[in-house]
Structure formats: C-alpha cells, structure tokens
Length: 362
Image (tube, rainbow, N blue to C red; front, side):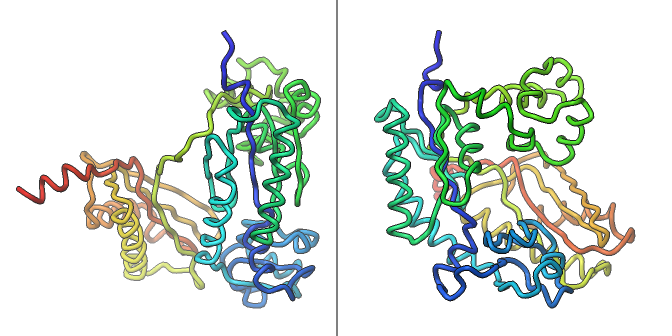
C-alpha cells in the first residue's frame, strides 16, 4: 500500500542570512559590506559568538557560532552589530504570515525557516516551482529580503535543497531525481551529521551520501545504535515525517556568556538566580509545568557539560528550579573558571486551564 505522504510536495523556505539581512534592510548603507551580528568583539578580546553574518563576511571565513574574537581577527574592518531579537521576531512574524497562506499545512521551525505542505492543491512539480517563485517574489517585494526554497517529495530533501544554492536560490528535487541529486553530496549535507559523526563515517570509508545509502544498515546500528537506522533512511531520501501545523514546545532554557570568567560560588549563585527568573517567567507565560531541570556548564577552556535531574512530580515552582540547578552545579564548583552557565526545563506539560479555574474557585 502506498503512503500518501510520499506523493505530497513539500517546500522548505529558508531566509538568507536572516539577522544580517534585516540589519542591511534597515540600514541600506551597509549593503555590500561584511556585516557580523553577535557579541561585541571588543577589538578581538570580546566573549561570545557570531549569531550570523552577511555573505560578504563569509568570504573572510566567518560563520555562525564562531567565537567573536576569531571573527574579529579574520576581518577587523567588518561592521559588528549587536543582536536585536525584538526586530528579528517582528520581521519573522510578518514573513511567516505572508507565506503561510500558500500552504495546506504550515510548520515554522525557527525564526527564519518553515515547511509548507502544498500537496492538496498542487500535485505536479511545475506548479510547485511556480508557487515557490511566487513566494520568493512576494517576500522580496513586501519585506525587502531574499529567501532560498527547496521543493521536494519530503522534508529532509526539501531542507537539503533549500541550502543547495544560497543565497536567493530555488532548487527542485523531483522523485525520479532523488538519487542523482543526493548520492554525490558529502554526508555532512544530511542535517544532523556533524563533524564528529562525519569523521567516524570517514573511518568507515563513507564520505558521500551514496556511500552511506549503500552501507549495510546493521553496521551503522552497531556503531550508532538506532540513529544508524535513521541516517540510512535519510541517505536514501526517505523521510515519512509530515508537515505539522504546530511544533510542540519541548524545552525552555537560557544561558549567559560572561565578559570575564567567574569562579566565586556567590557569583555563580547570583547567575543561577537571574537565569532561573527568565526561565520561570517564560514557563508561566506559556502556561507549562516541568518535570526535569537541566544545567549547562562551559569552562574557560571550552569544555562543556550538561546535567539533568527529573523531579518526582511536575511542578511550576521557581524555587524547585533553583534548588535543583544549584544541586547539579555542586559537581563543578571549585574545578575551574566558568565562561558560560545555563539553566533549562524539559518534560513540559501544558497546564489545564479548566482545572486551574476549578482549583481557584474551590
């Protein structure tokens, strides 16, 4: 029996260098210049990382998540701007409202990318390509920004396609072209295969997607566990996930990178109190209770650790977060200086508003 999802057409819309593009739109005099959005570089002594950068900056080797000090060394003459998340979210909402109307089902997955299922109204790739061009034109005309779009039989292929010809690209993968398009690509083009996994695969004489697709899946399972099955399916262009209208909130977290490394227990406690306030405020606003508290710790030498503890019952108590976080932190106190600390909550449960009202009444 055929799976209807395989016959549907999926679009992945990905805004081009979103933060920096918005900044250039707001300040046209920056057009054509290397623009870096992120932490203050402080003439090469700053802490933190690059959030995103313009394509002109990428020509110097700068990329997102790079230490801002490294970016400054590569291009000290770039325009360095702070992150203006309020502005980016406003622009994102306008863009998502604009492209949502073109989809039968719509799934926003980040501030600058979304999936569109257009299978009900459009059943051929010529029409889907015309629709993608229409979306690109509308986003450029109404928002003054470019996006890249992938058109394909499923989500994983559409995402790979949208990244294939950036910026301002449009790449179409028809079902009959999946293998010829996908197999020559390096395995790192599959989302989720990072540097460590790529190096392991290279040791297994697996460098291209085609190599991975033709491997004995049992060998992959032996090395990667259940993830090996998923990797093998994706390499063969198989992705049965559907475009979902709403992405479930799975965690709420925040973190802070310090201008100077900290080690004093009192200072650490103060940081956790501040981070917990932010997490709890978001938790309350979104009407969730939590079961698990997590912390993230990064030492001055960039060693990074996470720890988590699950409570016996779901809670909304801010003090439970701070007590658990500080308890988890005991393992690391006195073992070095910290450049980053983070707090989060997971295993979220939506609060039943009706039950809350009954409890308030009685």
